[in-house]
Image (cartoon, one colour):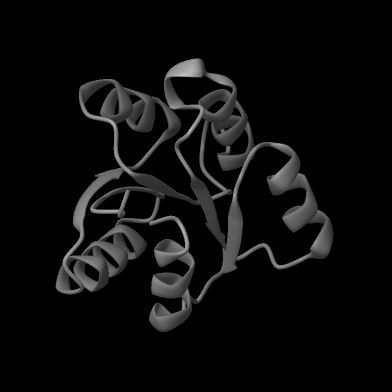
Length: 121
C-alpha cells in the first residue's frame, strides 16, 4: 500500500513547517504533532500510513513514543522513521529496538527522506 498520509512529530515549529511544506510539495498529505500526547491524539483521529518521529521532545521522547506506538496492536503495521539530530550509532540501534523501521539524521536531505518513505509503499 503506497504511503499517502504522513504524521510528522516534532516539537520544533520550524522543523514541522519545513517537513510539512517539503512533503506536501511531493504530494503527501501531512498532519503534524508537536508532542507525544498530540501525536497519540492524531493517531486516534486518523491513522497515517507512516510516522516521521523526532527524538528529543518534552514529556515523552521519540524513543518512548515509538515503543508505545509499535507495541500497540492497532498500529503494529505502521512504519515509524526516526528523524533526529542524534547521529550516534547507539541512538540508531536503540531506535530500531523500540520498533522504528528506519532512521534519518537532521538536517534532512529531502531526496534521502523520500527514498526512505517510498520503501514502505
